[in-house]
Image (cartoon, rainbow, N blue to C red; front, side, top):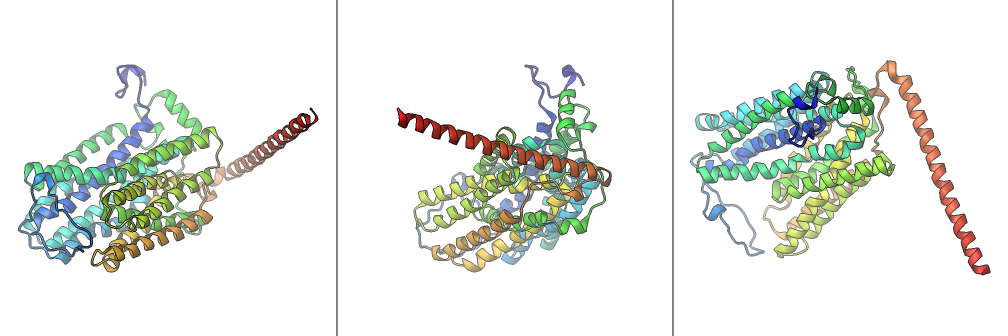
Length: 489
């Protein structure tokens, strides 16, 4: 396509690369999904009469109302247990829908799977006020479960699309940019939903707002996002040739379930996800400051991509180093937070550092599946996300059991449990994780070529190590000769 007729060309003549557009719509899709799921979490304060909560008076508390006034409850007499079922039912559907979503995205279409999921979620978002008004609370549970099922497409579809569009040397940056959008979605979902309800004084407005945003996203994706560069009508020829040269060719293969589940690298991702989501769900569920996680993930991704492309860093160790920082540092910061007593500034500082240091995880572990498999990226993403749902169930239960009175002494146990989870699961990933493409991802007719490529690549790595060693010895020899000459003088 010529530059003059490109729909995303700027006045200065610069054309936005389509792989950046695809990654941006993946981010936007995750934000839309989180906004639609957060609606009821925020609106429930307007639906149900307020109830007394069990708070400790260890530290003085100051009540600050939103926009200068208290937001009261509504007239829906849902019990605490019913409210818990309503809010938790989303994750039940999310758990159920993961693997089917991954299979559909990989074997059929990442683009249409994403569109169908967000489209149905958008319709449900618009219908939720009617469901809440006219149907009993268990029908609301059913609606939330259905929303969880259709929103399960989000990450598998993102994984499939990125695997088709993002070259290896931009994988950490654009992968972290996309997969870490849950932090942006959490912030904007709570903020914009709260603003809609507060300014209009009418809780259904939030559901209609996110329904409208969902429609805009669907139109944009249908127009600008396609499954691969070959199918895209607006991609510039230069970018298409670049991606054709640097990307691995994709094939429609039968899913090798036995080989997939017997692969140590896949199990490292599954177990690592449980540890990651335990920390993540704690941050999301119990504390609000979260936006800086997304920013730090982009910075970390840029550093990893620069090191891999320009400094010849080992991809495997680069992924593991980013993951180590993203696991351990937040856990240490959360432990320190409960030892600062009632000092709010110190507690906020520790929590801010926990959020920021969580970001590198998205440039490491979170995109590691694209190093292992290209053809089954969506399926692996869905399996890994399914294991992460275990943490979503466990985290609130552990918090409610270990810290029922919200005392600092109780929260110390909670933080040490999180630290223990992070340490154990990170250690497993650190030992068993890998960042090399596996043979079961390669078509049989390309297997010999793939093995030959691996052999040559290993030989090149060995030669590079030998050259580095020789250069190091040469520098050492020259240094010793210089010292000897100086001593003679």
